[in-house]
Length: 501
Image (cartoon, rainbow, N blue to C red):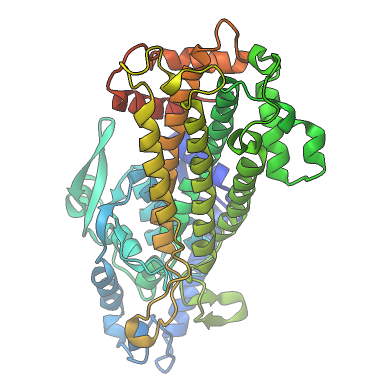
């Protein structure tokens, strides 16, 4: 392991995490973190040595069973039973990339030294991360309030040699029993100490991991939304005046200003953009790109701030403060901050898709000297008629997915947990909106690239022409009808893999 990423007492940003994952960096605790973890554990052991002391979840039951005292001999069993009983997730399996982020964020939180875990537990989680031993976690089961209980229980089961894990096989993963994987790596199951099970499953790392993943992809798709919109603008022979710098100086929302600047820059040497226009104005889907895309960009940036705070927080319960000699049972595991911004983010992403579909609709409408449905022989060929249907159906689904999860709550644990965030549901549906947005943008890209074909011999900008040249190696211009599902899938892959300069 040549590369090391030291988890130190500094803030992790989503960009830091992107680097760790993209460059396959390894994790290692710095000495300061080791000292914090050991000190906190020693303090906790000393406190529970007092036979009269009672601490929630450390020597009591959980939830509404918080008043049930547990004997010292059963403290380890109590924590292991907690993982087993709470591992009741269901639904689809969480993508491996997000599971790896869950491991990273749980390690980060435990390393602050306010959770009372033993060093071995943190080191084993780091081992799982470094060797791509990724627990099988399920999407459904968290209320996003007492932490992401069910998902984090599944994340933690392999510490005991229970549950299942993904392991690398070539360029993909296969599922194996955790017990056999531990044997293969010559590892013994971790014997949990008091409070450790609670430290592992209390926390917001399921919601946070989704948030980090979605935000990283949102930044990429936001850039693509602007780039594809610029191609559509040229394809539609649109006007550049709505992107004039002075227009946005009198309404200087940061995202709006940045988006207008991006469009000006990417189209600065376009022959199509500077040719004389017949129309006085363009439809809003073109004219209001800075205002709509910019608002979504501002939302993405705001959500990054909230997520950045969350991933650098301690979110289990109770929390241990050796320096002030306090063990405090509170509510840092409540996912309300994440629930609200994940709902907000879903709306912002859905709007990028909504305006994208409207540009697609305009491009196929037979205006601006473009043939109906962007085909040379309409009638015999349907051309790009039906991909717009597909985009419209996905846009409609996104609207349905944008019903906020965070306004919902349901009583659990016999009334002890009487208000929950539903942030986990906000997270999983936000990911669906994100994936849908990519499909909508891919469809607009297909149409925009095809529209440019009808502007020849004029060229778009040098940047766009480079992108289109690379795209045409994957998806040929449409001459006659063919199965466009394949073109959509190839376009999606292009958006995933092509790096915009």
